[in-house]
Length: 76
Image (cartoon, rainbow, N blue to C red; front, side, top):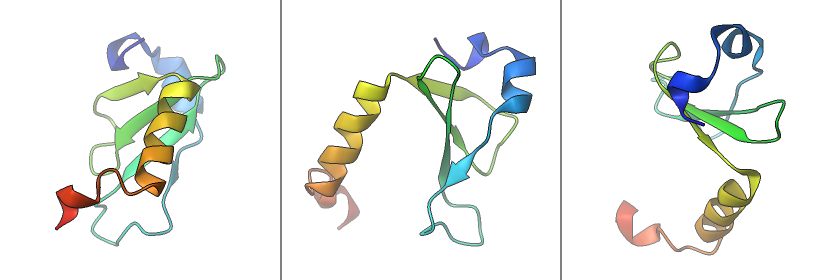
């Protein structure tokens, strides 16, 4: 499922959450759980824009990699 296949009625009912580390300028992504259990991700600066949808397993792998420092070299 991609952003274009998330029906408008479903988009309106999603409960979005962003990181506590987000800053006031909106430099953050937001996540919402879909009824299917998949995870929707959007850019908080463009809430009406595209939504990317990933499986729970994909998001777990990404978050685990971030916790393990796999992407730290991109922030230096």
